[in-house]
View 1 (tube, rainbow, N blue to C red):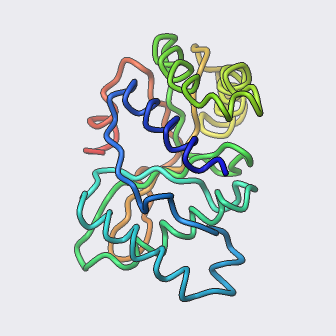
View 2 (cartoon, rainbow, N blue to C red):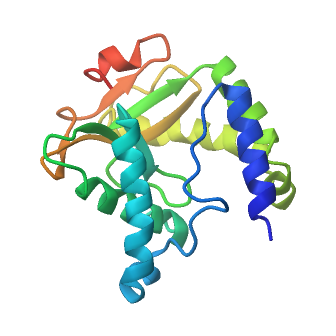
Length: 207
């Protein structure tokens, strides 16, 4: 019963940020979770085809999607869906993949991205358009401290145990790789910290 409302909220948030929005289906894909993948291969296959077609049409330079143990069944399902859709791309297809985290922290992030105060403010403003979700859970209050805690975690997990603490306030953590020849290859060796002032595409090799 929240599908139509959530789509409207998402559309408003994307408009604020200047993002285009491509729909998978009029009301979104249904039952995207590991159980559906295992028990209903026909439905799952149809959903994979939808996403595979979007990837083929858009030829994205980069794709962001939840990591494989992000706890929430829909997040894990989205990871599996994207991986299956990537496997359906033709030989020669390549893109940068960024695995994200929210409900479950990654054990092995390899990229820490600083967010400026202005960027965090833009993100929270965009989040405020998700009125129904913010009413259910005050994400607008919880996301900034989560980003601060990411700095603590990232300083050790990405920067290296015992290293100097990062000299910034907000960040997000990712596991970055390159999809090529039907699998994910490391994008770089070791952990990388990306300050807000550095051009991300140039620093990550054309991402």
